[in-house]
Image 1 (cartoon, helix red, strand yellow):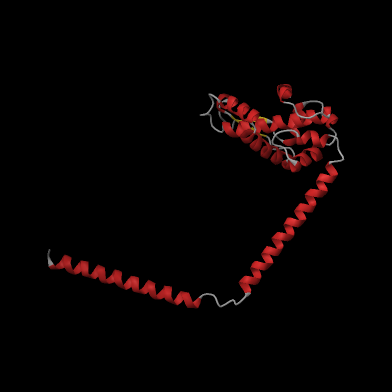
Image 2 (cartoon, one colour):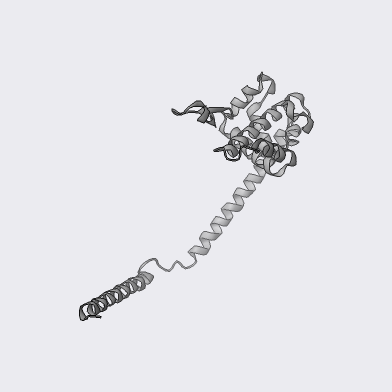
Length: 211
């Protein structure tokens, strides 16, 4: 090793050592220069946040009870609760959005109400390569509630899990196919809900294909 390269390495090591010492001094100063002693303030803030959370939970519980009491006055409410994936909150949302089920003449009208109707988004692409997307022109709360119902029914209910798997079979590599099928299941659940509301009957698996 020549003397020039040796002294270059020594200079680099010395420079790195000085940089490390400088950063360490900055870190030490920052520990005492930023912030101040808060005393009991963090504990008080935590107590306020916990009280707010408990208050919100109580309000939510009372609101759910009021909604359940109101919905129990409708004959269609227990019919909606009999559908897999639909609980009290989603049933109330459907009931409030549809209202009188007889004001819809076809299932397509009901699906459009929620904005769950699929249409191909081409954007200059050939029709065969167009990806179906939902219109999102309907009731957003209803659409969100039904998508949640489809998520639950498609993963926890044996019948709808099989339905989802059968529709997915052979199409696993299609782009966005899982989301498309979930939207279709959400639309199917809405049509089922509309049907049981009209007939005032409980959900029955053997009638699913007719919805």
